[in-house]
Length: 260
Image (tube, rainbow, N blue to C red; front, side):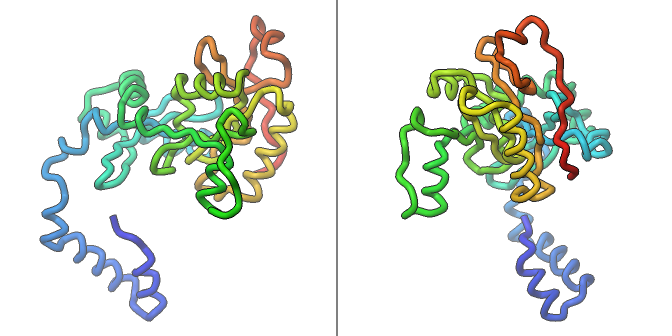
């Protein structure tokens, strides 16, 4: 992994882009660096490293043609190779051929992989605030929280934690009722009690946050999702009670009116 800060400073100090590029190449070719790279692609490209990630479908259509993906409402599940000591890389169509797997098999492997399931985190909003401002909050018990944040230990592509039905069921049990899921970014989602606010209110909140606080590259969705504790599945929420739509569910197309 090369971090850009030092090269940004070099550029500001007068080095040319060619000089900077050659410096990066030289760094990769350093014998000590190369000795630390795992020998053989099989050390990285294997099933135990495959994890899921969530991205928006809209805006990524061209990229999705180059990689395996599984639709989930207005989102797409893509797949990453997560090797903690070296970083994370996206699985593309070339890797799929080498692995000999299809999308269904990838989905099954990724969502059941301990590298994914063991790294999912749920934290109350008070704990998140405490991590940012240690003197500003006390940590509340999860059952007293208004919001629970779903991510992973690295806080990187952690929104995919919502694909794990057991995790969302656990949150529903903590709250003592069904939950709505708010897409904070590709890195995290937020669960709240279904009785707290209407879908329309929540959609307005999600849209405003996406417009004002979320970087374009981290954007996930303007939708609000609901969790079915019986099927352990997520779907786009409708502003009607769950029992009322149980036998007549249709996917809504109520997109945020704000442009991105």
